Image (cartoon, rainbow, N blue to C red; front, side, top):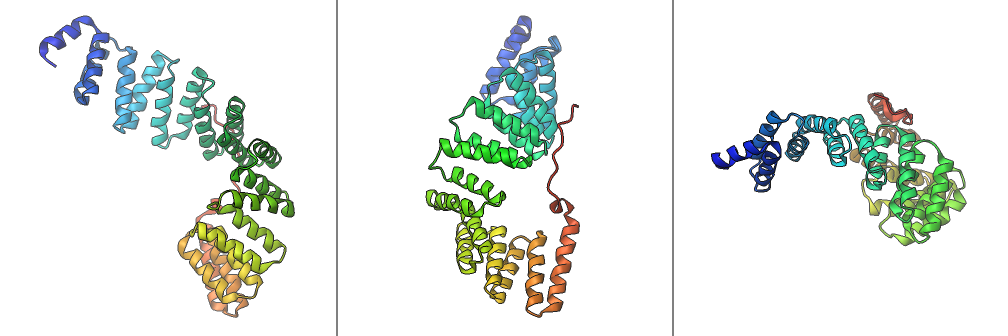
Length: 334
């Protein structure tokens, strides 16, 4: 920009400076644009467009701490601007500041209370923070706005499941199945919650339907294997677990299930081989070592069994959070 144009912009005030900065930003001249927005703020410290654009520019350049500060100032000037609160939340999230992100998004949602995409994002983030009740309420609010959107049912189901409210999760799964009877996920979720309720024979039909509806879906095969193992049908369970592993090789739960099915058939060497592979693929997980110690003990390999058990105990002590079901907590007021 020439000195004359800059002088004219200065004479016209912060709006003219901000407009000139916007043109420079569109041309990729970001440092010059930022300089003009800063000059606009020297003239008018509460100039909202300059505050927002400096924050948005910093966010796009992944300078998230700076972005959050500019956007905080912008929100103070204009708390009813959705984009300011939304981008501020994204900047906080990239910094690992989940609670701050959620507070910003709450303010954004107050501006656009029907923004179900934001509700969906917030529900997932609430769950990550173990704010399970907030996650469930947010997911169901989104579902009320868009009852024809299949994905929202599964977000709501997961939220209720995380909250330990399995009856509500099952009710949502049934609603999803009524709405989308041919959907693999709706059938699986119904079967999954029947399985949790101990209604294994009923669950099996839904796992079969889910597997038929989506041949690449691995989880129905895992749960089919679990039901077959409970029925003491070891060979059929082995086949189901192998089907799950064909679809996802690094599926620790399925490999552990396969080892159990092999144990049930007396194939202890094969079970030990699968457990060693599970431990290789998932070396921080104590469960393959614990199960391996039991198999090795049955095989009479007591020293190896002891070593595997000690490894399992060491891993459990290193990851105490893996021993307990995550407990819900309320979202902090501040």
